[in-house]
Image 1: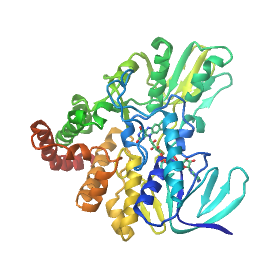
Image 2: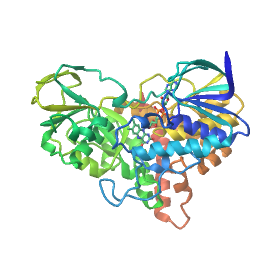
Image 3: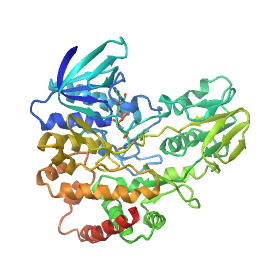
Length: 466
Ligand SMILES: Cc1cc2nc3c(=O)[nH]c(=O)nc-3n(C[C@H](O)[C@H](O)[C@H](O)COP(=O)(O)OP(=O)(O)OC[C@H]3O[C@@H](n4cnc5c(N)ncnc54)[C@H](O)[C@@H]3O)c2cc1C
């Protein structure tokens, strides 16, 4: 039975679904949009996150086009001092709620169905009543769930947890004071991605001495220096200068290792342990202050992945590691991006939102919506939205940058699209570059470096990617 009809059915009310809907609404006159989500509120994974989570990139580039996130101020204290604010998890959740209430629903063209599972092909099931219905989709079904973002509180760890072992998610940490038995003798952070880093920083800034923390690090990670991601013109030499230095490294590196060494020497990339060669790059972004703090954790276990935890210790790929009985393990192993093969963004009757500029999921979704609204057919649309593969290992990075560059080149040739990008609050640094005045010789010199390195960078990246 068809219960309802809509032009666009958007599956997922996270950053991607909302950024898509927001731009589609702005760029069309009459399209109707229905958004469904299993959660009770908009905001996707932010609904499930630990209380001390925050964005790791400035608020300026996150969210939807039509509503600013945050106040545009810089932090004056803490490990992000001097840099633009990072919205906290509760702020992001409140923001997405406001996007729905103040922007999308008042248009009269958007309908939001919370607590609703999309079973496929427009079939919906209420998670509260189990009632099923079908929605007729007149134009497109929009899959805004492709990255399968997971946080530890919503999935089971992939290792065995033997009886008696004490394992929590980051969400449980702030409630430890109320847990039976009081604080543990030792904390073990399991995992080495951004969540693990957040947990490390939170423990150390919440009173846990660094020598009571063990960190299981299957792979070290290259990290982006947050200083180079700052939106304000006063950071021109960090942000655009960082890009120029990156392009010079892309142009000159003889190998992927050398590429990352050059990026590190230029201050663009950071790593926590400078004696360990990272085997992971997920665009995690961090401040130098946070890196310095995390370097205080001396007991780093590099024995592969955890296979089991028990009362007496843990079993890892590389052998056993004894731990005191009263150890608390903190599971930080959920992957923010599920590895799935890229598919075309536009197919008949369907849009699959994926990254078209890494690492910006919100900008990517907004651009895909703009393209959906203004171009005649799937071929023209796909030509502007080549999928940018999300990297896992350092070796993947050249391919990611090349895909970014291909899209930027295609967008640069399209005047209307370029104009839209410049007006988009989610478009990172275009406005900073446009604001350079003829008398600012130092900035023009940076732009010249960027221009000079662009072609050699593209050529050398092809070689490195191969
Ligand atoms: C802790 C953390 C911090 C991050 N910080 C940043 C940052 O600073 N900057 C940045 O750019 N990116 C950041 N990211 C990455 C970024 O948040 C995510 O890429 C983005 O928010 C993901 O949005 P999404 O809409 O793809 O996914 P989600 O937020 O997971 O939303 C997808 C939604 O789809 C719903 N859904 C799935 N399947 C169905 C179905 N069948 N029926 C109905 N609903 C369904 C889910 O319930 C969910 O609400 C961060 C990620 C994490 C985990």
